[in-house]
Length: 119
Image 1: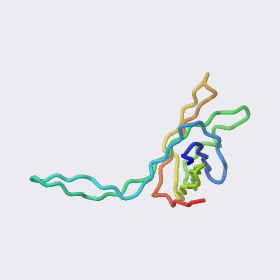
Image 2 (image 1 turned 45 degrees about the vertical axis):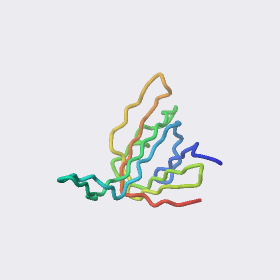
Image 3 (image 1 turned 180 degrees about the horizontal axis):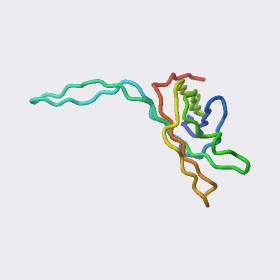
Image 4 (image 1 turned 120 degrees about the vertical axis):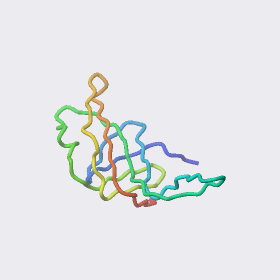
């Protein structure tokens, strides 16, 4: 049986090569525990999606091609057949560029709950 190994990130139709360790926190309704008296109940709230991935700065590449304050479609494509599509994703932080380690750039997106597509 195959388990998740490779994650591809497609930002605004462009495939970004990313290092191992990309992650997605799938947004949607979450349950919060509410304690009162000797009981515990739940109160629901909405939580957005978060995606984190690390790419590398290559010779001739413009930092400005990665960072943009606007929204766009973000796809998290798993080698196990699942694709999570966030239609209104946006980058949350100006990323740092780390020297000496291939110019690592950690990218962080946020957005609404994704649509899950099985391939």
